[in-house]
Length: 122
Image (cartoon, rainbow, N blue to C red; front, side, top):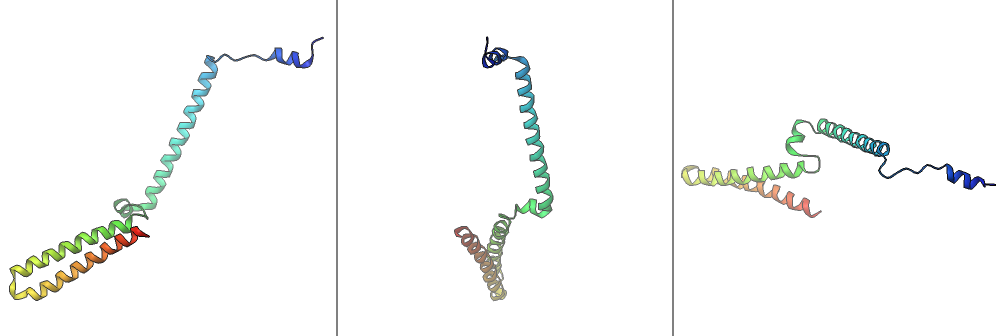
């Protein structure tokens, strides 16, 4: 008499490692998972673009936008300061006015630069 265990063992059909049905089913499942991941990523990207809006895409996300704006203010401030000093050199009668404006431009640029370096250290 054959035990139930032996009979169960004899009923098991071994799958060959090169089974075409198994390979196609696994590859189809893998392809389906990749499609799901691609669709999820596309959805997240579309949602992120809607949240950012026009200026958010130009300036970056909520983490980097203040630094980008400060960098632009630094460049604008120093450019205005240098430009005003050049104008003071060309217009000697208005040199005091242009020097005050240059001081303001350098003040803006320096404050924005201090914000950038102060933000990166915290």
